[in-house]
Length: 106
Image 1 (cartoon, one colour):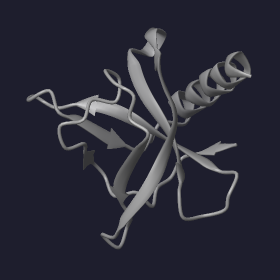
Image 2 (spheres, one colour; image 1 turned 60 degrees about the vertical axis):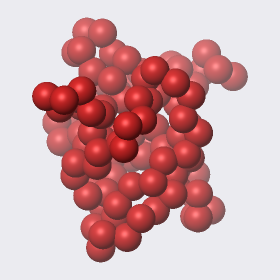
Image 3 (cartoon, helix red, strand yellow; image 1 turned 180 degrees about the horizontal axis):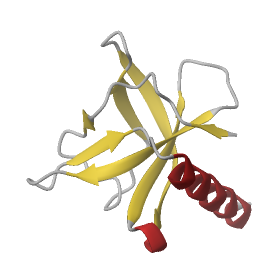
Image 4 (cartoon, one colour; image 1 turned 45 degrees about the horizontal axis):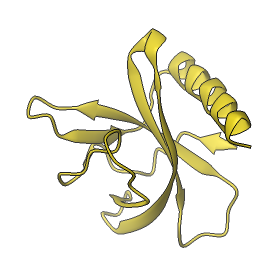
């Protein structure tokens, strides 16, 4: 099950990494206390209809079946930032796309 993680501090700038251009297995994000938390990248995908790119991650340190989805947004310098999805309709579309991606991978 994926959830929208509001505990991840927004935005998070990926230091020179391009998720959509190469296979990144792990990333570190800041939580609401400013602590770095290591996440495993489950998958990343695009939704062309809404022109969005997304990454699904799970915390490495926790034994949980929850995965968190974040939107990949590029700034004016081309750096990728990860942000929580605030729009409920967008989140529903992303959840649906994620389920399809996972079905195809299994």
